[in-house]
Length: 292
Image (cartoon, rainbow, N blue to C red; front, side, top):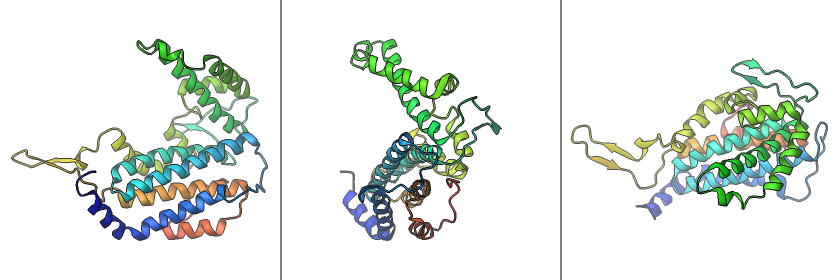
């Protein structure tokens, strides 16, 4: 237990009761879309089982990340909760990348050349995402094999299985896309920033992602210790508190709403009114990354 943890948590529950209740309600709505029984998909044009699998997997991941963020906020660990919005942002970007109707990739403001015979459809984008996972496993294997002290551990990996999945991925997406993904080590062949700009998530990247990166890179020291101007005596802040809690509640909620909106619109789930109600409650207008 951290100092005053129980006291701080009680204070936060009283102060942010409405906000926490709103987050819980939003999460219940989000989870209900995939746990209330059979999902009836009414708009399947341009989709296939691979798209559905990747999209639903990313969506479930977003829900679980949002739950972790809520739990940390309730305990007054706002800095850590805010750090997780970085993870949630990356999950949101991946989901939007897969589900958006049309995507034209850019890098540093310039449109990337198209790959002949491999248009960037939702079907291909889902396969790019899965291919990058296979390539990452291959990179991990190679790294372990070259690192002293890990060569024995590398033998525990399924080398044959990794090779088979990589070969299947390369066959599915083609030589040029495989080259792009391997060189950039991303599922889009571009940086996360360029992809966020492409998907109209620039504001979320500039605010949520950038500020959430401070704690992950340990550049948020003033949150935990300060020195007196003259004597240099440090004041330590070990107790939980409300730092980053309000910002995290709002930011994480926006990201989950974007995920819900894309899943609902692309799969035709019919929850437009409830989504608009959530956006109104949060004070947001139209989100900037719609599927169309």
